[in-house]
Image (cartoon, rainbow over the protein chains, first blue to last red):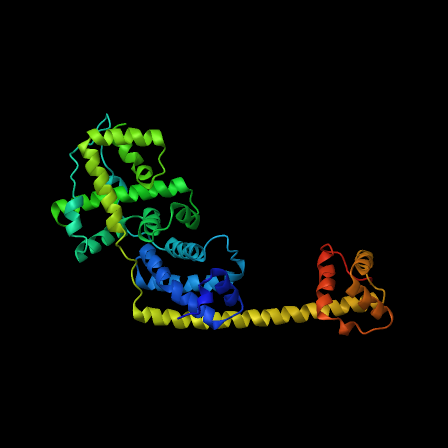
Length: 201
Length: 166
């Protein structure tokens, strides 16, 4: 276990700058899981995620002296991670993603739901611990284009505030909220179809 | 408010950032619209279920490989930094020695001369050392704490301007 003082962001960074190997270990322990997981959710490929994670640590070493402590260390590192992943995506052919539009709710001209809305909220409670449901949701999120996926992962999976997500991604808070809302509408619709048909489409 | 507007505003409604009047309108709509009530319930539930998704865990093999990578790179990076800092420190020491040598031999460019004169009156430590140099003291014996002051003089010269008289 790393020493307690290293739980303080500024102490950790200070010791990192001084080349303390204990600080390197503490940094690794604290962040490697998050970094890899986040990279995996953006890149969806193990070896890409591994390389991106390496990039993140290298950047942290190189830029440790620029960390001012205005934001939390984790959000600084998440930002580095998102950027490292997007750099990697840039060179690649985009993976096929679903068109989110097909999953947006449809309304009549006077703004009413076109078809009856089913309430599966009780039904799904019984399935909450169901492994399959977990896999299915993961697949649905993976199918989202990264524009929505990254926001969704940071806010709804990692539980960051909209402000933090906005800061990490360099977006405005309204942009984060709007993407998040659309991602949830998409997932809600996917879940509705899945539960109705009992299978993924 | 109609169903479409309600769905559009749902995010704000559930995160509590909606203004009071809109919230009342939305609540009024919910009371009479079964579809929207169900929609809100399933939307909210979607959020809840998604909380259960975990980020992909790092496989043990990757973890170990990443760990050795990080430790090694941290070491290399620090060594590189130390080397660079040492070089920078030696370079500064050399430059300050040249500067003080020039001061002693009265070869300073006018702008530097002026800096020396003003600083000498303000800074006791430097003043003392400069008098020592004037008395034939050794420029190499410049104490570290005032080396910084003289190094700043060099930074203060406008780019392109020669520090020393030829």
